[in-house]
Length: 331
Image (cartoon, rainbow, N blue to C red; front, side):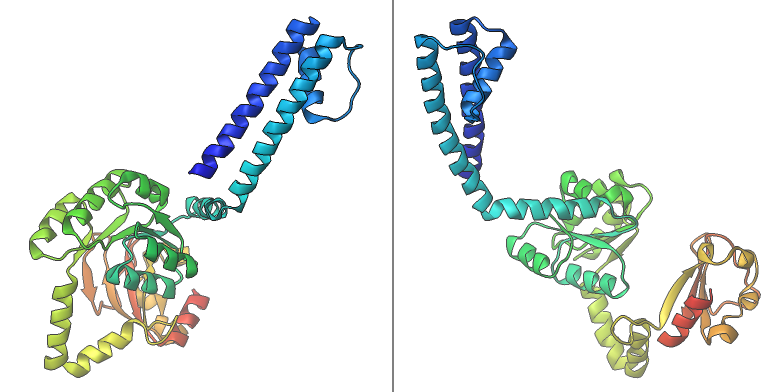
């Protein structure tokens, strides 16, 4: 802050010396404004151009004073500018502005509020599926970690609209709020829903009593990590093999998946309003359709082959990574 203040002072001093020179030449030499400005600039810059006329004693003394003032101000300005450029904050500011420009260009990205345990896991998952994302975080130590990991971030409080707007929320596809406080998550959901009426909002909650409030505020889904964790541990006791098998379906290895969601709108137009049988995924790739989401957001498990592929519906497809890759290439 002190370095920045010095820079502002140097700019002010240069302006003051310029004004003194112009006014002085107008009064002493009875010159026009343009001529006085010319004389002041060539005197301050010491470029060596000739004067407009032979200077009298008073004009010479004034010019000497103006040169001395200019040298002093230049010295101060150079020192202030050097300190400003040498300061780490300057380069950090440039880097942050460049990152902000990248964030403003994002489309259909995910905004992650909070880079704690849940937020960190969310980012890992998004990264595996090559989905664009930006993190909002205010903890200085965590920000350093994000910078080292080349993760796009906004420094600020996610409960404030300013940070959400900087994250280009208007162009986002979804928001994940994983703050430790349910009250903070509720505030984020309220603010985010006001800024973007249509996108998906996933909120973390610590207590079951917060779930209803978050849904009313505008959350699309509410996740209770403790509840899910306890249920998962109990399932490993009751049906261990089944749970381990299902766990492997989501992501089998780094950057590969056994399950994928396909939007019918993204398929070639000839498949619209056809049936799953017409799609013939099993023959062209080896993949199997295990689920169907209707335009009314209803899920059908193991749908019939005669199920019609309506616009705005989705298919849940199961297959090995190589089979899914082949299906994506064909379709």
